[in-house]
Image (cartoon, rainbow, N blue to C red; front, side):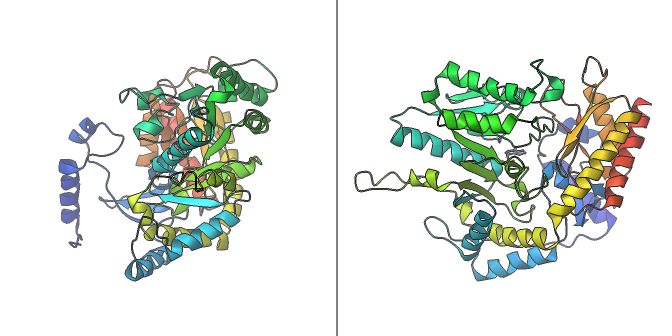
Length: 459
Ligand code: PMP
């Protein structure tokens, strides 16, 4: 690669970026008056931009990804060694790191048995939808083909996965969508839809109501995030998951848990679903699987699901007729194996639980001080603070002001997020998801910056 050294070279990079890069999720008009952010280097929980400014990254690479932190030489070495030995072979062939990572992964997921590799969270989820449809065609006489998804949840950016977007603004400009995807209500107790004591069970019962309305024999699968991410960091209320599971069993509906964000320790367990004793049929994961050191996602299924695809003499074409070209890249599982070793050897899940509790406690203290905070919630190092103009009416704080809080944190050298950018009136939850290596000092630095930012913006 061309050597980029001095500040002049860096300015050239920024200009090349401004001229040619189509950034994700951003209105480019902004770059007419300000420079695009180019991140040049990372070490641990910190990153440096093209101007040499140092930041503590409280969002793990922007979107909950770099779980083990930046600059991990052991992952780079594992990937390098694998690439010079055997970089790629796809189709029906397997690979050494692919087999070994699958074995270690399944050992952490009792009840699950098969791993299907691809490259992104969207793709991993799309595979599930295809599997559900194939099961419907081959085993249910074309019935049980519908997929239920939940308001406020997000499952990806392809047309298929956008058909299961519970966030309308992300999806509304890209339709029409395929048939058979049906929405159920969300379970955010802070924004109650039912005035009842046992909110968790009530929210789950709302799923059953949709099933009965649609006809149980039409529903093949229910997809849910264990803790909702982009929809506003939603921790399910007590009793919710038990009841959801019961409903799925009652109507023979496959349960798909989207662990694209929660997977690999983020929520304080290897997988978010393990916090709730859920027995899923599908689990998908992506971001933390290799912490962004390589592109990899996994669709993990139970043996019961896999069995549906075993050919027999009468129907030799019943295997899963799908391929992901770059599911054959060995860099992904090689990075994932080392990523998993680090999480285990450094007890990053234990650290996530401890630091998550500290962060939540700090946010609770901020809530006492700043009346603009209406609610704080989260699991592990996956936390949110919802900003409201009025605590009684819960009217969301104005989006412009929430963005100012994010910018004020950035000015202090702390990168935080605000979610959900795509729900009008709900883009009001500050989002924290630092690397799982965060120390107590890091956590205090992050919440300290939020304290200052809230005072600057709201007084
Ligand atoms: N599921 C969830 C819960 C997500 O948050 C995301 C991405 N933010 C996806 C799926 C899609 O993943 P990807 O962007 O890798 O396609």
